[in-house]
Length: 110
Length: 118
Figure 1 (cartoon, rainbow over the protein chains, first blue to last red):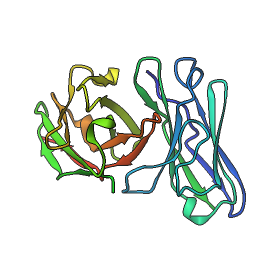
Figure 2 (cartoon, rainbow over the protein chains, first blue to last red):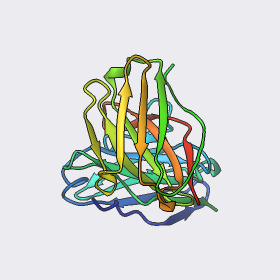
Figure 3 (cartoon, rainbow over the protein chains, first blue to last red):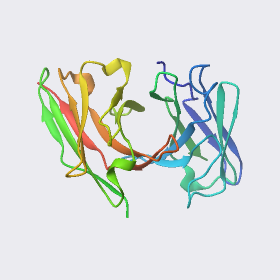
């Protein structure tokens, strides 16, 4: 199972919106609505921010939103803030009863 | 409250095995599966496997088949990850994370650093 494809880095200025893509295949993202996104700060454990493609856990800012089209999922962060600077990972359930992560995207807030 | 706690760090030699424990509390242990994920220094997250804490059934990443084994002890609400035939590329922080039952990993342990070096 190959890793999902994410851009290595994205950047944006405070107040702007950015979108991180996550490209999978017809064995994972394309056939399941089980895409999740995680935020990770250096030296810390990842934190769940989006599950089931579009749903936010309690306590996660509504500035974070998710979507999916075909084999590609996306995470959008609106009203960018300095505290959003972190690494972001997508993951999906697969038809092999396994999970696969994306390679991760480093978000820089300019 | 839900807690997932891992213990200690490990330094070991190539060819050896390591066993990491992960203790869960604050919820019904057998109602949630447990994942294991690792992260090599400066690298991304890699899914390793999942254990059904009720039945004990497991699924593993193909890349680790034959070297990884997940087990659980329901009496102590602890999940274990065994990794054998260690090589330097296995140096990483190893995380356990609870499955939310929404196909997501909702509570993560703090991570256990495993260093493989001769």
